[in-house]
Image (cartoon, rainbow, N blue to C red):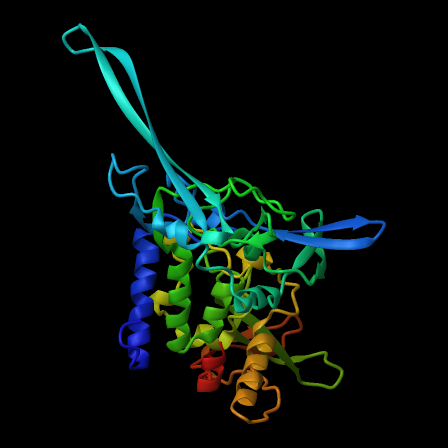
Length: 411
């Protein structure tokens, strides 16, 4: 993120990432975990899954998915450099082979001629004896600690939200169990995905050599963007990049809500003295909205270009939350993995690590004060001949609140 020496550095970094996503990226972040519920005589059980190809591309790289940078590799040394040492680090023995075939073809001169072609392939087999790297205990605990969401729908509407105690779906997608003579061992398959996934274990020969080593994915770009946005002073925007994803369907906007008050001449309220209508800034949200971004954030952001996902450039880039790939889509009815709870608890935990005890902070910013400005005054004659005034005004210059350094650090 450039030098990271000042807030300005992070703002500039965020603008660069945004420009890439707006102008150069052909797609957004996809890949959402399927969280299913099963009912049997033993009770209820839940299972979360996601296909690694959804966000990592396929083995031939003909469908790159979210991959935006990759190093090509040949199928054998006859065609070029073969990068088989990378899967070997993770315990996959590689075998390269080639096949030559000859067929007749009519040339431009109309004569028959023999055309010889050679193809190659690389086969992999999991071998724990040669494995140098395996999933760490910290990675396992991280996936176990994630909040996974299950939603029950009827008629397209969410009627129930649950939080089953299951692993992040990316755990089985990235480190599946492999059947070996030492039992079912987990192998890191980030550079050589298996053709299928099965919780009980898969065959050592189920893995495929990837003819392109990924170096950068869209998901990483959005994560870097989220980090820059957070450090630039917008932690709620960063949180919604993880939770919901930002696009022109989910990004909330400021709208004007008309609030009216009527004053009467008499206690019986039979004669109007005046009607005052004030246009008050409020947050307009859609059904699939980013719930963390509040009025304070939108007012502070103003017309900042690198925070605007309502632009037409993002119409066909339906980014989902980065967190959703492993934990499912969080609906608006979610009350657990929300900014005010998650970030506040992180602030308490961080203080505890520093030997301090603090109460759970209230991160809600409500009732922003602003300046009232009268825009119109009209005298109206009622049906009974009495007169009253109609005043119209707007609230401007909201007194916004900056997030604290502790809040940004906790995000």
